[in-house]
Image (cartoon, rainbow, N blue to C red; front, side, top):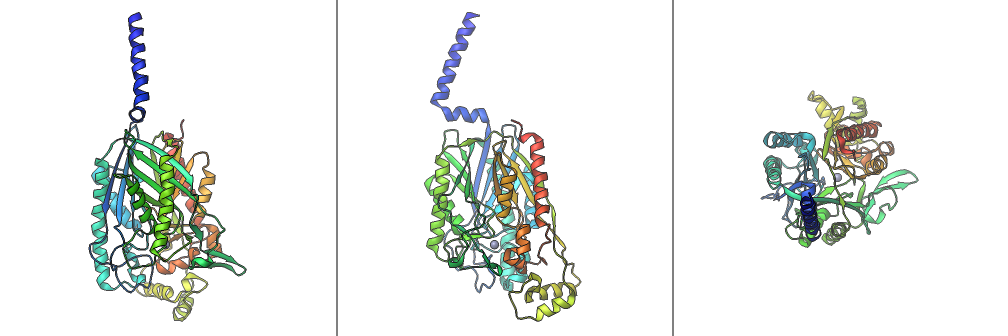
Length: 477
Ligand SMILES: [Zn+2]
């Protein structure tokens, strides 16, 4: 007995010594998180049509730097898996994301709710939402070339996820969320005595209004502490640049600078709810680089600072509420609008081009959509961190409201996930009107604007998704 106690004591001493000599090794094996990461260059091999802005006159003239599609695969100690995909692209339609995720489910047995696909929304990437051909003025030659690129990209996405899953090995998964010390996002919805005005020139942006200045960072390190992946976010429309070159805008530069600072690591940018938030300096490469540097510095500060350990379990839920459009005006009203010369009318459906498009659809006997699915996703990493992924060009109001509602843990709200159908405004913004309130629907095939219950329909679905991950045990201490 004595001998047993003695040997147990010796074992304990060795164990304590091992922990103090190799703290990271011990933490990794105790947590047993696994992670895998993969990055693929997706810069088109030929000049194709760029997304984001209407009125382009040329395809891409070259590249500033490469565009990437990246995947981070995570598995908690119980084997629950999730994959997060980020891409330097304008956005995907729901149909596209569904096709890609269905293939991933078939190949890798990963359920739909465990996959989140986020796009940075760079306006210097190829147009990947083929349903917008009709409203973007894309020449026929590029309708074919862009469609070919988008089709090939499906395989690239599935392969990249496969590589990340194959790369799974023990990892230290931690988290840090810092307020950015020099936020560069400002509001382009400017309050005036006559209502909200939409401004595109930095000199007249509004420095008040809601923002989300947090830079959340999920850190994935090898057991020896070496950084393998950094997934980070910020909420700001990536429209520093308006050029005809492939470029990731400020998120592309931020990823580049983080990867340069940690050789061998993959940096992934996840766009936040920044629809009405825009960079405070625009239209020069140096500004995109400067914003990228500011964001990369905030990421580095988080990576090298105190970390919150992620306990798990990893839980995922996905919901798809239907958002309702306001009823169409009478045919006579649309016919009048189609003849009008006013390109910035009070109501989005009275835009001449949009009214003409709807009339054309009616004449062909096509069904005018009355609703659009709005995917929402909740990924819980345990009691410390909740990631909510919203679709559409999400306004920051959602981030502000969800962070308040689910306070008690860190809430990371990403926009531009899974389906970028158009703007996702809040109730307040629908009432105020303006570009994000409905006028931007002129550039989609949807009638728009949304009915005033858009926010309550979205938030109800988010609450259901969060309840689902919490009921599965994520909040159990
Ligand atoms: Zn946009």
